[in-house]
Image (cartoon, rainbow, N blue to C red; front, side):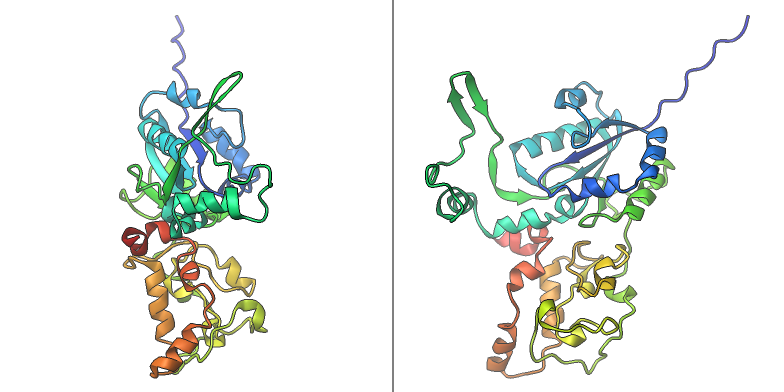
Length: 328
């Protein structure tokens, strides 16, 4: 009698989720192109509501740990995001904070300069774009209508990172992570070659300044005025800082391939701080201060006043993960 054929080995199960973010991380995954088809032959995508018609009940039906890896992009802005973060944590062997918003709070984290009350007042009351008939009408978690009761997620006072909400295994920075980075990490994951828990994956230990080939100003470099990129005819071969334009390269982890800098625009810090830097914004201010060409307090203040929105510049992607956020 012929032996029964053994069952084919089950493919790893992969999930993607989009919380408080712009959706750029999802686009970056789709930009894998034909490699996404290749990936689908290696894994089963069991949850990707942005692309396919999955339901939360599909995840709830899975056993704990049944998902091999979840790539979670987006910060935690409301109760729905928090609930799904906890659900996917329970169902996943590996949880990856995918992109700047889940990693360090990203652009949504800038809302932490304000509280829920002031945000609601602006959006639903005082903003010029608010329709006069609805001005002053604020959302409620529960609203009764003729068909029953509508429930929407609770809006939190602060934006949180994924790691401030659940236990995270790996961090994959970028706004968004670049395509080659995603493909590399996916293959490392499937090969079982991931580093120790808590590591940043798909990026470098160096800073963008370390890998940038632009001509640096050296120890004699001094700046007497800071300008925005559109105010200067930028030399594509010279360091932005030397030209008096703030670049976050000295305080940002490398690994993106420098697309902004190659396009003659300064780094804006989306890959987060390198190892050893606790607060990216504070480190940037320190780097800027070291370049200012004066010891006179009044002149120093004049030069600092040429920096437009220094807090937003330094914490563009990392306010929710910063010391400043903890102090607020």
